[in-house]
Image (cartoon, rainbow, N blue to C red; front, side, top):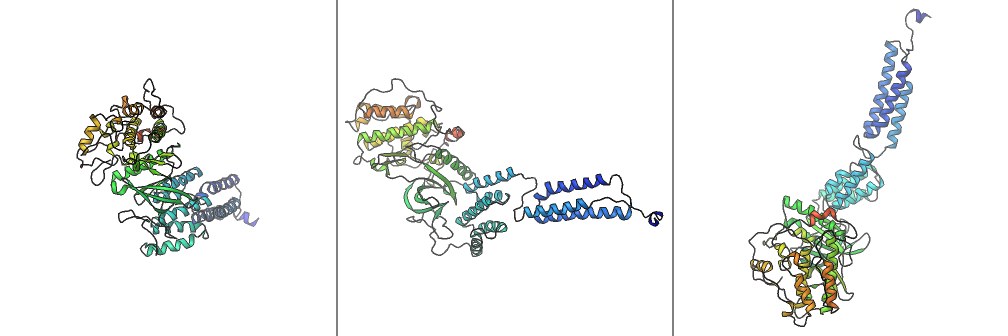
Length: 535
């Protein structure tokens, strides 16, 4: 009563309860929407600051206004909620505010895609934004291994450090972190005994990064065994996928030596597009492509390892295959080309070197789908356009837009050489050769090999017509006539087949890649060094 008489009483206003519920609701919004998206120290500090603000507000109203507003429940709720959020997110990687689970998963998938293309820095920028999980840590671990293979030990150290922030006992990340740190500080020297250069490679061969732990030469995830061949576009190695034990042939292309600047960027993007295009072709007479990647500007394609040899060794007049065997091989190549053309893929470099034949199993495989398109706009250091001009169609040499009929012309040249041991058109210089291909008719194959039947001669002549609309229009038609010639049947397709790039496409559609594979080649320069009559 004395306090009331002195004016020291405390009252509870009518808005006290709604105000308490409002503060409780604001605290809930903070805990649900903001606290989980903040870094752990920031979230803890924000929760404590909010609770302290509410306590100060309640004390101020009570001390100076004589008003009692019950805010103890909101204070306890904020403190308890902050503790729960911190415990639930303990050890997790921070996520930028406003990011959803779908966006995080998109970042993870994009990071894996970039890693597969060899763009490791961009992959790490994506992956580091994703909340930690066992799957993400595994992705980061393999990313760090890729950095080590490329001798980027400082970057590998950063990735391992990122992993250890979440789990200090994850696999052998701690020991790998220490080793990467030591190698980065020591100038990234290769471990003693490491075999950086490839087995059997000469001084001009590319040097590949080795595995950081055992010093094995590597290309991507593949261990390199030995060199098994060389070509105009690069070196072919025998390799093995250590994860599944698959033996593969790895064909390399030194993009950094053939392109530079913007042209290198364009060639790299085109390489992966074409590798993906070729990788989708599934046919018994087309080599299967498993993977594609890049190491230090050395692009590579991993494909099935084929037994046997290419057909270049049976192109000499003293080493020719029996006629039925040649016709059978050509028919199966025509089948493969018909399948590829129906999927809007043009090979552009059909020749004996790109046809593999195993006489033991009678297996025929067409190789190098996608590679010729990459190099078609490039010139070697000597100025000669990559590829084999002797096997190019007139429209291809003229720089016109080509389609599947250009491949069929090249197959006709290949068939002529396999039957006779020589090329139908030869020239002492590039200019003379181009003139003959454009305007001089190929000789009758029976002038060089009289014992060949008229049916075989007709097939060869029809395949070597100068104008695309007058030669074979489809590989299916070409193959059918070859098989009739093998059977000694002089009857052929009574009416020509109209060319249709979208005909009878079976299997996986390739429409997304039509613009890439059907794009006309770059116009070649007029100046070219003389070439010999050989291809």
